[in-house]
Length: 110
Image (cartoon, rainbow, N blue to C red; front, side, top):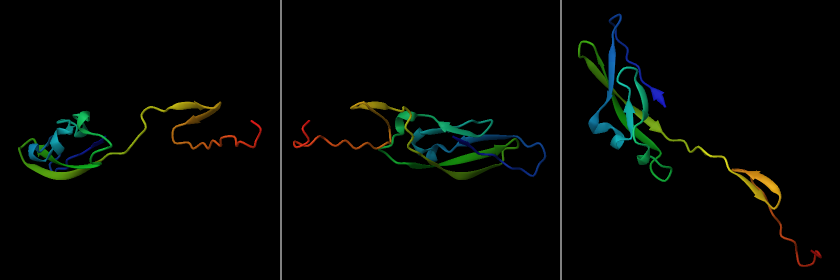
């Protein structure tokens, strides 16, 4: 999904990353402690019917124990994960395409 990175004036500084337990969007996300990659921790807590943006507080700690935090907003985007292909009266259509079907009128002789 995304990543955070720490910056330190000390050359060669090493960081660990975490999400503040009080500000973790209900356990929806996690951060890799070594690399700072933010990923989904519990996808069952996400859905298009619920909130589309979440705020989490990421904490960065250096090797000497000094830390800082930053709010990060994670926004959801609705993506069709499975493309559907329909056969509608011998006309092939795909998701998000529009097709108009006019039924024959009684006067058309059909």
